[in-house]
Every structure is written in structure tokens, then in C-alpha cells.
Length: 237
Image 1: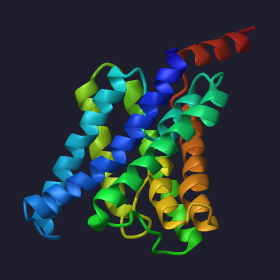
Image 2: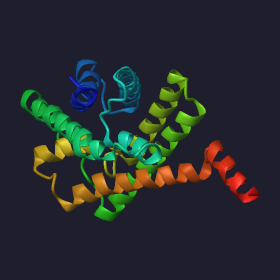
Image 3: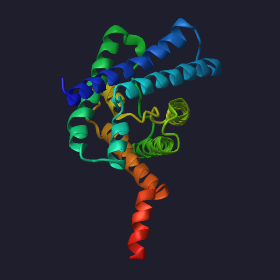
């Protein structure tokens, strides 16, 4: 199996596992452990969610950059080498989408009481602004951590996980605070809502725009030393 094909398979697997992990955490905390929707139950759920993000970050690391979220690989492509953009858009993102859809379909077949995924509880423009801002925040934080803590896996993952969980809580009553188009489309496909303008605008277009804006902001605020040296040299000449 070639490296590209292997990466597609791993993207599919991670996206499949990600939608299952969220469902299993809810069932374990509120069902098996018997916690209710109170502060204690939410704290326990948040603890397992952070642990879950550590597991997926570790899997992504050992699996050579495999990802369950299209925004992760898009931010890398926009901020670095864009030569593989066609491979990302034409193969990796569809693999993640198929993984999420397959995972949700299996969840619904085996655990019908698991719920129906995130819902848009506000207007389309309000929802798009929410998802766009949440995505902008987490992508900007992730890019900053990659620059300031490049070799510190634990601290980088800890800050990123806590930040993502905080942003998710802030947006949970509005859009679900997803920041993951592949995961959302899995549930939307199961409800037959994956081609509605609300879904496409709020959960795809707005997060992608937020990702692009975050990359531009990061490049503007944290210019690479090599770029500054080149510009200085050109001015001196």
C-alpha cells in the first residue's frame, strides 16, 4: 500500500473512531456511571473528552499526520506547502467524510438512543458567525502552539484540548460548537440534512473561511524570521 493510500485509510478510521468516541463518552458518563446533566456530570464528561483528545492526538502523531477533521489538514495546507491541496480536497477530506458517515450509521443501527448529533438552534447567519469564530479561535491557537511548543507534545495537546473544549462549550447551545465539518455531516447525512443551505453554510463554508482567516492572521502576526531577513535584504539593496 502506498503512503497516500495508507493515509486515506487512516483518515477514514480516525473519522469513524471520532464520532464513536463522543457517543461512547456520553453513554459511559451518563449511563454507566449514572451521572446527571449537572455540574459534576459535565466535569466528568469534560475530563474524559480531554483524555479522548489526547488519544487522538497521539494516534495522529504515530500515524504520520492522519486526521479526523478536514480543518486540521486544510490549516496545514494553507499555512505551509499547498502542493498537495488537490490530494487533500479530492481524497483525504472525502475519506474523512465517509468515515464519519459510516460511523454514525453504525451508531444509529446499534445504539438508536444515542441521539441525532448537533443541531443549529439559531439563525443561519448567527450560526455561521458562531462556527466561523470558534474555528478561527482554535486554528489560531493550534498554529501558535505549533510555533511556540514544537516539541512539547503533552503541553501542546493539553492547551489545545482545553481550548477546544472551552470553545465547544461556548457554542454548544447555538450550533453544537463542532468545528469539524466531517463529524457534523455524518449526523446530517443520517437525518437527510447534508445538502441543506443551513448545513453547508454553517458547518462547511463558515469554518473553512475561519480557517483561512486564522492562517492569514497568524502569518501577519508571526512572520517567519527568514521572510523578515529577505525583506530586509531587499530594502537594503
